[in-house]
Image (cartoon, rainbow, N blue to C red; front, side):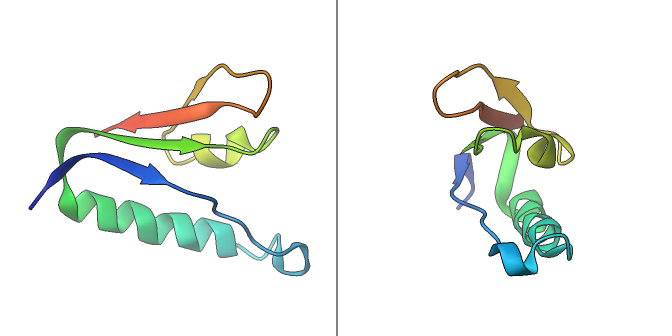
Length: 77
């Protein structure tokens, strides 16, 4: 069964292991999974930690303004 909406929750890498590409690898895996199950026109939503939006923008996500918690982001497939 294919779905139309997906939500990515809390991609977090312990500070000791940051800057090693682990977050990028996790997102690559998620994106690969989504490309196999999401129908054209599906939406992928996530909430980014404030200041970390650029990480998700590299994967095609776009900002949705929210001054309190950082930007909610989504991607249309």
